[in-house]
Length: 184
Ligand SMILES: [Zn+2]
Image 1 (spheres, helix red, strand yellow):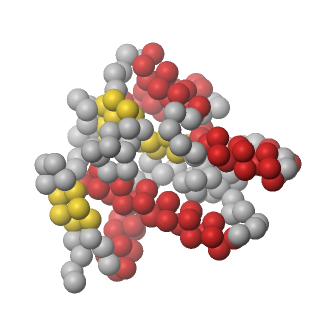
Image 2 (cartoon, rainbow, N blue to C red):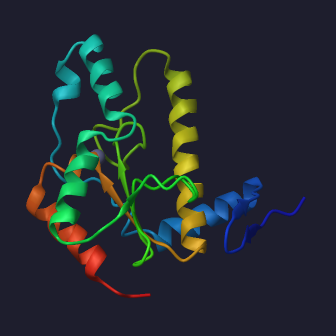
């Protein structure tokens, strides 16, 4: 079966085989190189020094909706005067923050769950390693497909990584330049 994108006004269906998947991933990596930024900044060593119990609590805290980093981003963009909708289920990947009029979306990703490239928070747990590898790879794949689908629908995308949220001034600059730009 040939694989291809099928996209219309109200729906995006994605059919992929391995080859198309690989090529599309390469194109996406090129096109979205500014979105999926590699981690360069210093990140906390806290994951290395806390007990496994605390670590799993922390990981649980990162997962899910209305996590703290997302609240920080929401407050910042709201303060800049941008109005948004949340978790639009009708869009691929249910983007965390949606600006319908600007046709822009923001994802606020946990570095572990979404495997931030080059980030120390994106480690692989030492126990149940295969389980985690499979799970994290599935997450990454799902993210990639959502970004590709949104891109095909003409949405501009910004991914804010959890480890970037602590630097408020740089985050604010990044958000403002994304939302204020009009390059479409
Ligand atoms: Zn990170």
